[in-house]
Length: 217
Image 1 (spheres, rainbow, N blue to C red):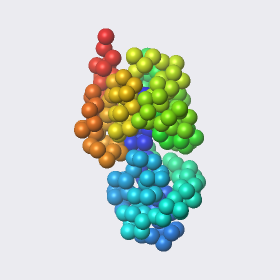
Image 2 (cartoon, rainbow, N blue to C red):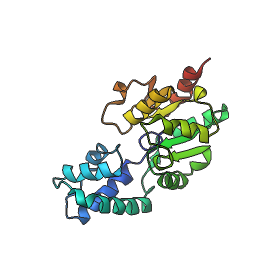
Image 3 (cartoon, rainbow, N blue to C red):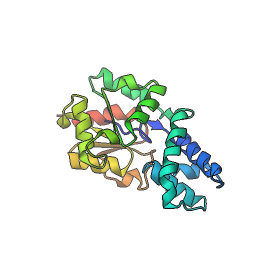
Image 4 (cartoon, rainbow, N blue to C red):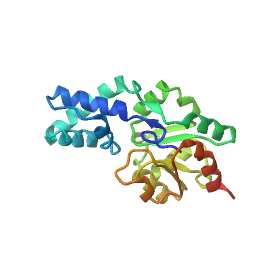
């Protein structure tokens, strides 16, 4: 099972661009893309709140819902303008598939946006299941999200691995009793090295071996 944003795909450029589009529209100075990237990881509403605050114009709570809807409209229209799979992702997926692995996406991103992104990048056919937070009984860090993704993929929790980048992934995996691989380059307020992964990887080249090590009888 893979998280999506910050794990499989570098989505920060398009998320930051949508944030900056709304900041400029509201008469607020845009953020440096690197600064905006640091705010990503807790969903679009949190990104809006933190983005306006970082730009020096805290967002009135009563404006959040309307701006959130505007964010979704703009983001969907530009969902893969600059977003790309991280280096080594497609090769690692091919290797795992060839070795008999069933692949799935378990993401708090809405399912329709997840499908739109993965379709645009040509990645959707690689996955037996794609389950966004809106399609689960409860989103990560609730373990039901992971377990429902496994069931949707027709797989076995005892032979599954979660691959993610954040505390939501780490907490969900621990509570589901599923081994955890974290990537070191994703979107997380807490450094991935401090989240208690079974294995931390710096590049997807290392993922197939990590999975074999964790699932070794």
